[in-house]
Every structure is written in structure tokens, then in C-alpha cells.
Length: 327
Image (tube, rainbow, N blue to C red; front, side):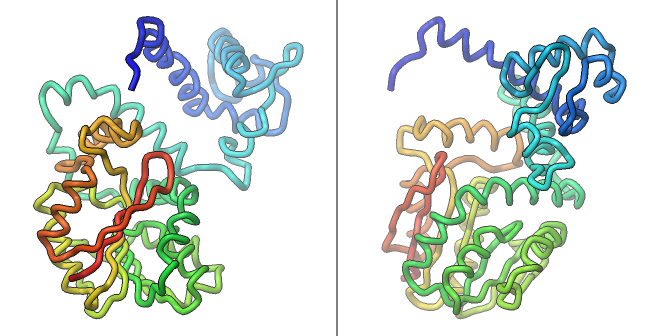
């Protein structure tokens, strides 16, 4: 691993300027106001209720970044700006946009939280509106990994699959698309299941889904499951909380049943891979007890709860899979 030199160090910090320019564009719905039109800065300023001077500076900066284009005095969307960030586009990433805007304020508190600790009073009752939009964001992100994950899992028969805290059901849906005999039980909050049902309702696999709303620590998992999927749950909880869920999962599985964990796992040095190392700070900001775990400490916790025969698989952008068997 190479060190940052002085110029690279400064450049990383200067990228805050570019991030804030793009965040301002999302905040003022610039890409939506532009749509498929060509607008002057004065016209856009009226639509977005901005001062003309500020609108012109923002639009010119966005054009310089390549987020939009400028011809003469008119500004218009770049292809991806329209496709993913204009609210009128069928491909609009509303969940991702929401999460970017939400995270901006939280990250501004990083220095204070590192110094004084987590704001535990902020974690409690879950807001259904937040959860619904967050679940859309998770679907948009999970779509990038669903095929490699499903290919790894379906190399063997899936059988009865419990998708624990599976949110939009993106991974389960891809698994059932490949394994035509598999059945899935999706367990999550009611707001998340509402999104999952919307996504899955028009597909032929809907009849092979069962939806169960409830708290992961309280809801029954039943017995005789062939496979349990634990995707992006590990990092939300402390070691003791995960251990409670692992014990519960062990009881629900058939002998030699598969337990599939998807997460950003760290190497033993806790600095690699890059995305997983940075994710440690994300969990410090956004969870009451969560953190990222290394492969070794995760497998140690799995062994403690009756699992073994581990296999690993990378699925991209720092995310990996640990497959364990009930022994």
C-alpha cells in the first residue's frame, strides 16, 4: 500500500468542493428542472427559486464537472444526469438520491462523533417513511451484486430460503429466478416488505415468496430451512447481538444447511479492502452498535455458534460472501 503524498492529500480534501456542488444540484433538483430541455440560468433560477447569480455559478460548475452540458447560454442534461437523476426518467434513482442527501448531514458530524462517541439517543423507533425510501436505495445498490451472488448460491440447490432482513428482496428474487424450485421467506419491517412486494408483484416468482413482518430478534424463523441469507446485517449489530441471531439461525437450519453472509469483510489488518475500511466509519455514524468485521472474527463467531466448512466469494466493491454449514 502506497502513502498519500502532499498533493494527493490536498486533492482528496479538495474533492469536498466537487461533492458539495453535486449535492447542491440534487438539493435544488437541477437535473429534474432541466429534464430534456435547454434552459438559461435565469429560467432555471425561476424554476428552482434561486438567485440568478448563484444559479449561473452552479450551472457553470456542473458543466465544468461534466454533470451537465452548456452550449452558448443554454444548459442541458448529460445522458446519465437525465437518466438517473431527473425525477421524470423511468430510471430515476430516488432511493440513491435520498440516501446521498441524508448522508451529507450525517457525515458533517463525523469529527464530533469520533471525539464524543455515538449519539445513541438518535437510534430507536424506525420511521416507516425513511425505511421505505431507504429500501428503494438498497434495491438500487443490491442490483449491482445480485447476479454474482445468486450464481454463487445456486451452484447447489437452494431449497427453502430464509432471507433475514432482506429488505427489497433483490437477492432472493435473483436466486429464485435461477433456481426454479426454490422457495423464499422474506423477513423484515413492514415498510421494507411494502417495497419488496411492489418490486416483485409483477414477476412470476411472486407465488414462491412468503413475506413475514417483524423484528429479527423476535420473529420465528421456523425449522427445516435449507438456506439462510444474512445480507448486510452483520455490520448493523454488536458481536453479542449477532451471536444471538446466529444461534437462532442455527436452530432453524437443517443439518448441513447453508448460512450465507454478505457484507464488507475486512482483512486482519483492518485497512483492506478500501471500501470496507471506510465503511467502519459509516457504521460509527449510522448505527448504535454496528461495525465492520474481519473474515477471521466472523468465522470465529460462526464456529462458536455451531457453523463450519467455510467458503469465500468476492462480489465487488468491497463486498464478499462467507458460506458456512451447520455442523
